Image (tube, rainbow, N blue to C red):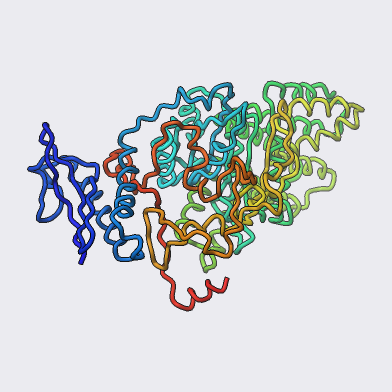
Length: 623
């Protein structure tokens, strides 16, 4: 029978006594200090716990319970040859030392030689999640450069907890975290405030892709569908040298490729405001007497000016645009209808009320957002409610309103001689919804008619802030990851930077990391099992051991200087940058994170296997 107990050893001159864990068995006795000292009066030997009179009693008791649980579990499950005093001491000491090192280290890496002769490249991670992009950037250093993490943002509080535990606590970075919905009006202001005036070289992020996925049905009016526009709004404001948008492969074929084209158009529509006056000057230089539609040319200019306005100014700019078009309609109405008809005809009322709705865009957008959020919150999809919800969202959409105005004009059957004026009003409303690229396509016809196409193209080369090649599909296994996972990357490059068209693989096809390499060192985990420490495996017993390679950090084979994939996983791929990085911890709340005594520190975290029945276990054995 095994007896596992804690007891207090001799107190020091300050009357603090170290707690020891003692294991006694018939032919075995192990004694290990657990790295904690308390006052003798604060120890409850009967209940094997620290009394409430000690200020840290909760954290210490949690630690002692964890230690005893791990030891008891090991004594029950370990092979007999592992139950020696030396091996038991090693196991307990590993858990104790891992925890102790975190309480003794102060993270200071200013004197780390890693940073000598290297230029920092700042980056911001939007839709950060658990930090996948951030980890990749921090790993991607060279002899000349390294990535400097400024800020991450996500709406989920668990993402914030993961960020603060990993980057602020463990690695000692001062990277900020903004927990806020990117669609909220003050998001950009709060983001800029947290950057403290620092310039951002790279922005990365993958707007949530549920509605883009090929797996399952795509939801109409999903609140995640418009997050890309807000992502680009941040890019417009911060003007990074590069930005990366990651998404699922299905985005390339969604709506017959229209979403892909929309994304590329929107990226190309980001303008350099310092040069944008050239385009406005070009439009002003077109003689109004030499063009067929001077009213449309004026509308193009008013729409182009939207690019120069702040978010607050933009609302007023759109209102002025609609008033300009409405003024033309009001002058037309006296020609196509008498007074009584203009007040009672449903088609003319539709047009008039449509203008009123367009002028209320801010209010309608607010309603739209609230309804989409409620629809998502209540899981309205594939039911009797969804059609009515989507119908209303469609009615208040600007393009739908413009469509009803167009249909009302056609249904009214105005005299044919006013067809040109009606077409101009309808087209002017369509210009309101154009992005910059669509406006440029329209202005190109004016430039060509005037014989100024080369001048126009030269202006465009100056005002486009970003260049982008076709999106490409990256396969994770080509970069040292043991997974065939495909992701689409859109990489925007500021016009003064080199265009990036692809990211070359780091490993060849026959060098890819296998699942066996990634997981073989966890073979001690059983069914419905949980471990907090690595256990020694019997070497050479597995027929697949020949698959294990020594590799560099990016997965490239290197027999001389490399280490195994599992060793990289244990030591971490970026800790070399941080001379005094702490060991990983496990916490459940921000409150626990703020109190280091409550941290669960062990060599292995979050390795609990699911409970499978016998048939599933047998099926797995076949592979």
